[in-house]
Length: 425
Ligand SMILES: *Cc1c(COP(=O)(O)O)cnc(C)c1O
Image (tube, rainbow, N blue to C red; front, side, top):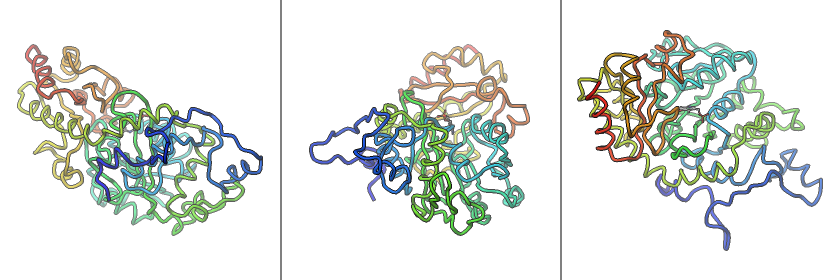
C-alpha cells in the first residue's frame, strides 16, 4: 500500500491520455442521454452513471474516492457539511422508534442534532462519558439500539475515544461504530484499523484546511455485515420500495450497500450535496493534508508546552502533551500526532478567558478550527451557549475553556502573541 502522503496527492482521480491533470469541475446540474431508456436504468440503479447533481456529480466522486482511500474504506460520499454527514450516517440505519448510544463528548452541533432535532424525529440517544466503564457502556444499550457514535478527538473537549472499548461493545450488540474523525484526519488516525465501521468528517476543518468551503464526508469500511441482522437493519436488507424493490446489500454487497443507500435515498430526498466547486477546493486541501497536519501538530505541542509553563494558565489539555489524561490512549491510536487544537483555562475564569482573547493579535476570534490561520473561541459563550452547566460539564466544556487552534504560522510567533497577552492580564 502506498504511504498516506502519496495517497493524499495522487488517489481518487487518474486522468487518461490527454485528459486534464487536475480534477475537472463538472459545473453542470444535469447530464444528457440519447434515450429515455438509458436514463431509466440509472434511476432504477441498474446502471452506473450521472443524471442529476443533487444525487451525484463526477467531481464530488473523485474527491470522495480519495477520502475513501485515505481512510482505507470501501466507498465514500461527500455531503454539503459535517452536520449533513453525521445526520446521514445515523439516519441511514436508525429511524423513528430506534435508539443510538453516543459519547457525550462530541461537537456541540452534533449534540444538538442528536439530542434535539433527531429526537424530534423519534430517535432516542443515550449519552455516555467517553471514560465510562465497560459496565456503564453496556447498560446504555437497548433492544432497539442501531449504532454507537463517538469522535476520535472530541471538539472542543479533546477527549480521545477508546476505540477498543467502544468497538467491542458495539459489535457485541451487533451494531456498527460510527466515528467522526474530523480532528485527527486519516493522516493521524484511521479508525477502521481500530474497529470502527463508518467514518464521518467535517471536511470544513483540516481536510479543506484554508477556511474556504463548508463540507462533509462519509466513508464506509464495507466490513460491517448487515445481513447477519436483517431485522435490525431492514433498510439495507429488505427491498426499498422507493427504488423498485432494490435490496441494497444484495445488489451492491457489503462494500457498497451503505453508501449507495445514503446516496440513492437520503441524498435524493434531503439533497445536502456538496457543490462541485467546493469539492475541487477540498481536493486542493487534501493534496497537502499530510504536510499540514505535521505542522499543525508541531505548533500544537509547542503552544501546549508553553501554556503548561505559564503561571497565568489554570490548566492545559492537549492529547499530545506528556501527562495529559489522554496522552497514553492518544499514543496508542495516534502515534504520529493528534491535532493542532489546544484547550486551556485562563486563571480568573470566564471573564479572564474573554479578556485574554480580546488581546490576541495573531489568533483571531472565530467560530472555526483547523484552519491555516490560528484562531480561537470561547465555547461557553458561543458554540455551546445553549447548554446548561450540567450539559457543559458532560460535554467536557468548562466556563473558562478557551479553544485555541494552532495554524501553520511559526510557533515562536504564536507563543510571543500569547505571552504579550498574558503579561498584561
Ligand atoms: C465542525 C464539526 C462538525 C460539523 O461540521 P460542519 O462542516 O460545520 O457542518 C462535526 N463534527 C466535528 C468534530 C466538527 O468539528
